[in-house]
Length: 116
Image (tube, rainbow, N blue to C red; front, side, top):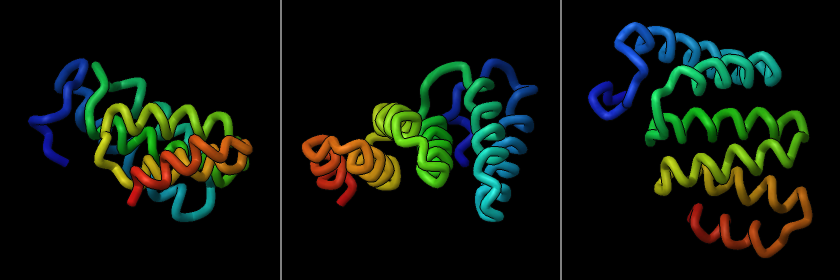
């Protein structure tokens, strides 16, 4: 992570953000999606403003929602992630998967094209 590019509320949050993100990643890898999304939510709350790194965390939380079959929440987070990090292929992919599950074929195709 490029620390200089991430806007924080204050310097004390840097360690907390990184710890929450790492914890969320580990929980997700173990299949503990509800706990992982809680860590990502904690991480997101500490950002001062939207940033590319926040987009990655939103995309990660979208992956949790997808794994728990909460497709509307997944779509919301994934689309937010694409606004923060428009080059993040995983965010576009997750937006497409969520939209597909919701039956929104046009939005799913649009997102899939952006992911590739």
